[in-house]
Length: 401
Image (cartoon, rainbow, N blue to C red; front, side):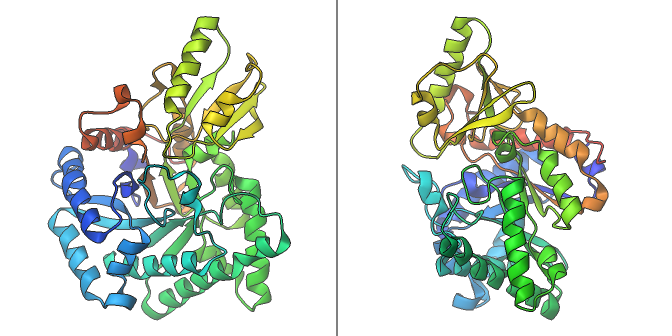
């Protein structure tokens, strides 16, 4: 079982699946859905949840803005419903469930004080919500969208991010509370894979040490988030980032267990046409669905499209040796999504490769796209789908290295 392999791990689900810009809306969604998930998964236990707060909701809880009372009250409110917070998703800043989110999810990016201040508010909120002695984690934007080729743009994100690292280090020195920040590589972003993560953290390390900082402090408080769907879309084995972390000392801080659809283009014409129709069903207007094309026996990344409609509109026919992968978080237990296959096998490979000495304690199922899935793939109740995901992960028997 999952917890037999990872006895120190906390496994929960990410609440960015629920809409809610205000604190009252967050509470309404948790009351409706998270409590139902708990009844289905662990009725006699506390259910860990990875909370998402918009900037507006975070301000309503921030002890620096409103005093300690609201965060304390919210912690008691969670406890009264058998819920506990162990990690925060600090990626979406605003309305993550608007009609057309697309590129807006990357705004504001790490070149702005808004991103820094939002993240610092999350640090203070998480510190207030965690039980004494517990470690916390906050996944965050991988700097911003695009490569940012200009030198001034490239360097503008460093100081705001290091400001947060320094606050985290001071928090641990002053109170003993250990919280780490987890940049989350995502296709198409400044940090999109292990290579770009390595480049970015080299820049950070250089800037930090030039300013008199300690590399060990940076490595302690800045730990990448490994999203399995994102790695799969980049045709990167999830173990690649894990191996990199062992070489560099930047330990993985959080694993987001997620799954992506994929389409292979071999077979009969009618089968290929059915797969294309299945992909067209996923080309919905709310979220950005970066799409990649790989080819060859090992499926190397050959082409990148910023969104699924761009890939579908590209001229030419897919080669029979091609495989497309789409950034669309589908239920983690699915090996197939109708006519499409999924990258579920990457989850199993990663969990089998993790060793106790990797020190990864936070695992979060992150499937936020339930309500934009084609109707035939949605459960009658959202809580049923989330519970099925957690049940599937809990039933796994990874070797844990």
